[in-house]
Length: 638
Image (cartoon, rainbow, N blue to C red; front, side):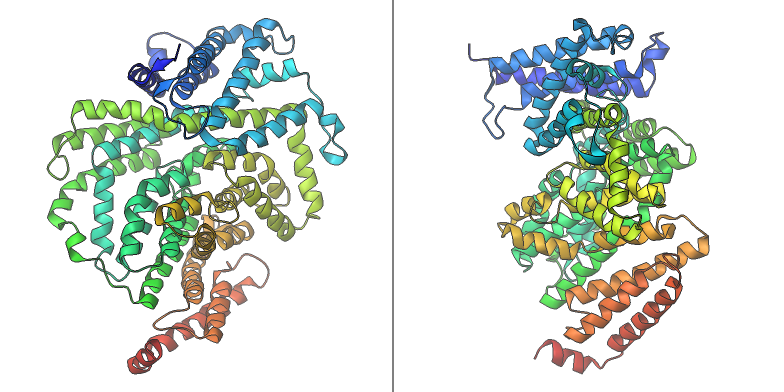
């Protein structure tokens, strides 16, 4: 028997994908309580996994990139087996949770099946990197007593380990799955609806109108469009694939070198994972880890993310000036009156922000109400002369389900890591070891942590990066006195920098493939464009004024001087201000910028360095601005 034909497999996969989204919506609206059904949260998470695992086996081939004209029989069997095992845990959970340490076959057999099937599904969607890391943790759990030194752990019976990881609230059905099953699904649903109703096209058109009439407009359009799209997406590589196919050819047509076109797109798309409201789904998980409101995470992350994009935007402008690139061809810029019709899409975002920050709604409920408003205005007004049909809107449910399969699998697998850390005591041991290696020095520990974050983040999706680093590295930073929220944002930033840092810079390499540019050249250019993300986390780790913690005057001063510093360093890296900068001037610009960037509360005497950098920076800018135009022209065009 060949297996399941594609004409049957696709509708089945669509039903499963829609089922997991509808289940999440029902839970967010508390419909189960309204019909008198009392469930453990873990039963709901199991219900989500009940749809996710078989959908993964039906849609994802065992060998990545292999044609999927039919579903092989073994995948059909694995899909059915996953439904049986997860369905059994879902129904029998109240009894199974009491049996973990007695390890009866009725528990460990389905538990072991779930762990193995989850890992195989994860391998199909993310590749081997994450599997190797999780496999190392599982091996440690089994033979931790053989590890020498401070990292020695308690060895676990494999039946107990499987039962604990599959059923306990610290395992697969734990915190990451909780966030992914509620908040992430609803926000991705909102993002998908934005795409099918024309909202994504509206924001791209608006970016073209806003930036297309300025020099280097194509690069600025890429920064804006990729930042907007990335802020509600869950993957830097997906952002590159989604927006890069449009922006990279446009940037190249304007005359930018291919590797720079790819680099700017990679950096803009990666920055979307650091920009609220979604932050690659990590914002919601961060709120749960720190036990603080989601709105507090958003406010803390906002200024660093804006500084990241300010630096990128300034470099795009200066690169255009240096290369003599003009504005976008007016024929490519959409008509303002046509685009103005789409202003109704902004209403949905206004509702989302109002419900989150003023009415204090749960994020998943706020996203659902925003989705309702989005659908209503799209049906009534439409965009570019077309309105979505009800069928199109309903198709967004299945599309959302397919979009979140990877995130759900990563979230469930993240529970395996957290479970091992809890049951073996590795979390405490690793924190102690990092602090010991760092010698109690915050500077040394930050440098070591940054290196660990970039190495561990290589090849992993955003949510997987954050969960791993939040469990392994952030506690050590908190231990030496860094603000908890600053520590978590620090590891997220450096984890995401692995996306543009060679030798394994997935976002940069994906953009290079689209641009047909050298991969390593793109990676190095991306590091230069994304320089701010390597510096800003260190600054807010020492002085949390940049994450809006402190006196209002100190916060305002830190933000203003940081913007000046970003401008100066960006000019130094581009080698251009009003005209080309000499090597000596570039060093002066970079030095003044770095001094201005340092917040006044970073260390004793930092106020003085801040003032010196600001004054020197203003003098350098003034010198460039008041120079005679003829002199500037002569130096620019020798």
